[in-house]
Length: 474
Image (cartoon, rainbow, N blue to C red; front, top):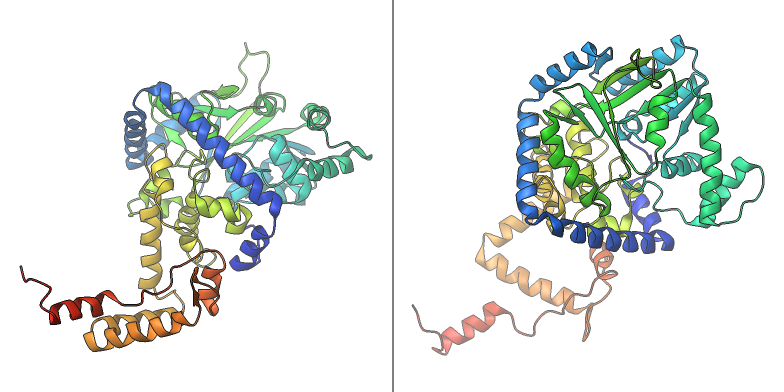
């Protein structure tokens, strides 16, 4: 799942220096938040919808094995093939073995986060297959050799000049940075790829257990080309992306586009129930459904189980003040923002993701924005606690807090510490507040203004009032 070998602080510094990224994220968040607010209004009582969605997701994950069994049986009854992959390697191996057996030369893909998670493109390319992302945003970042910067707007960090340069390399000539013209060129290229494709791979927004159906939510129509033109179609699904019934799907699909992009409904809702039958005029001859664990079962039965309720709308990214400043690539994971800061450590451990639980202000805006009411900020606190319990936090940090605990437990040391702290802060104070500093303090004051220490502390003021009998005991 890791997308960068650079240290976290270097990824963050790179994002801070990207002026276009900073402005783009600001505009996108404002647009998405406004759109979400406007489309939630017609629902009447959005909280009632959110609670219902939360109940559906909770019931599903509480009974995940039961509904996965029903889903698999119904897929197979309709002629599909089901493979349960415990690990990323198993999922990738299944797809590459299929591609090898069919001598696949061209693969077209409709946006799939799970395939990004398991690095499927690289595995297929090693076979010599030409793998093409057909979602326009995904196609752009594929040409750039990058990963998504946002769950629903993967190329949010690219301007039209950069996009024109990327597409010009494909065209073999310089293309003007005219959005409609660039779109038409990309459309022409991708249409040709659809006609050549031997294998289509798609993600899965939701799978409906009662009928064994897959639902794709798209705005460009590429999902329908990907799932109908090639002779074989592979569906990649994280094991939690399932609903019991179509009735349950109705609630979730009502909230998903509103929370994601501020749309009442997306342009295309594509339902697929099995491979082509005798009476169908199009569709794949084979349908393969790959259901991936890759650490998700780590969350089941734990205090983090609710992270599996996520419907990948990106609403938490669209409100998060930290994401607004550092963008998606700074997280170093396929999943960015608050959802990624929780999901990555939960399913993959702290080895690569120890910094992510701290990439948050804990303001709680993500929890308020989540359409299925996942308590993201509370989970971030729990992850920090887990790191401390496992002694994964820096030794210097643990020593500092141990010393702080001893000082605050002793009135004499506490009073002495307050006086020493005030003296030190006064060295960096002015009328405007605390400026400059050293170490971590400087990092904070470069971005924020803190008030200078008060001339008199509350404790000394209280002591003087008591001495002068100005305080009455209650």
